[in-house]
Image 1 (cartoon, helix red, strand yellow):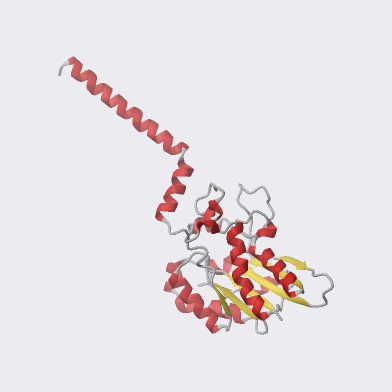
Image 2 (cartoon, rainbow, N blue to C red):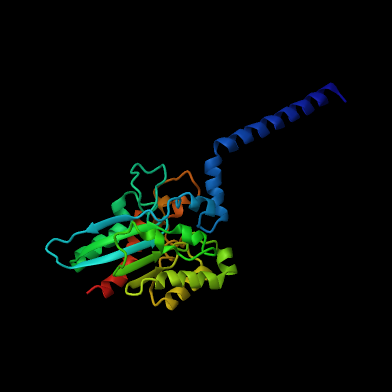
Length: 277
């Protein structure tokens, strides 16, 4: 082989090695950005179970609060049972570290507090309310019923109104393989509140099969059904927190931002507007 040919071969090998090494370092440096883009391309908006579990680590820790309407002698009680959309810790990007619904920018902008304030103001009533994260029940519904013995910290034990906002943390495959168990145990949990006005939410991320099963739960337990799945479907990207903020963890940004939280509160308000005298 001629000397010039060998030189070209060595140069080609060296350049290829350089580009491979450079590409590898670029991938490492841009890993978060790459995984975020892949998540958007290959997922259907809903983050992975691993991501969801990071924001549902402390189930059954109750927050008890009240909203007072001046000059009112009427008081109603509400119990909120949900997952990270209702009550959880917050991503590191949020400067306000107060536990609240993911991913509102502050506590007063999550759907629970927006809804409570509106009910109190427009219906002229005081409200005593409790909320907690019951994602543990979602993830382990095949193992046991909802454990009401863990509700001792709740100020509101026998609510006038109870809201169930769950379904996002249930694996669809597991749900479909155990349809009867899911429907029966979720129906039993809702029906536990015999004297309450019961409200069941469809999951934030739209999934027709999940929606059908949870609709059956609402029918079985004689509950109102509130659809928030159209909000998380991706049809209106403003509902997602990622529409105005970048999050390091893939999937977190498809949780409701302030705009999405307001829309959830509006959907639930339709029931309270009709039911509260």
